[in-house]
Length: 172
Image (cartoon, rainbow, N blue to C red; front, side):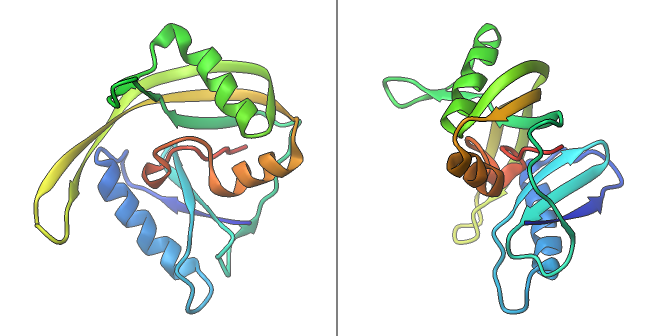
């Protein structure tokens, strides 16, 4: 896996537009003729982008002893199919279950922030816009690996929902 960093002049407000901007940089960093799959996470004016398809960038590996950071779309599906926000009191237990399913043991977890990230997606076929609103939990973690294969997959492909919008990427 390789990572590139993109400097941003200001914090992105529209998560869909941010994804489109990251896509342009990811395409330029990719191996010739390859449509890259990638994860990204915005942090303090930088966007960290990771992909197995990059021809350039810094090689990254997961280091279990280092603190990790993760933004997760804090949504659950109700019995009737609606998406609901995870209640704040349930966030630590919910996040631990997500991480356990991804092959990690959570040694320590802190919820840094919970905020709604928004954007306007443009449907290219119809030209219509529809709003995107995702409740996002930002976490600081100390993890151990419980299942190496699952943890490796999570490092490569992300955890949870909203990966197109800069969520689900473990960073250290």
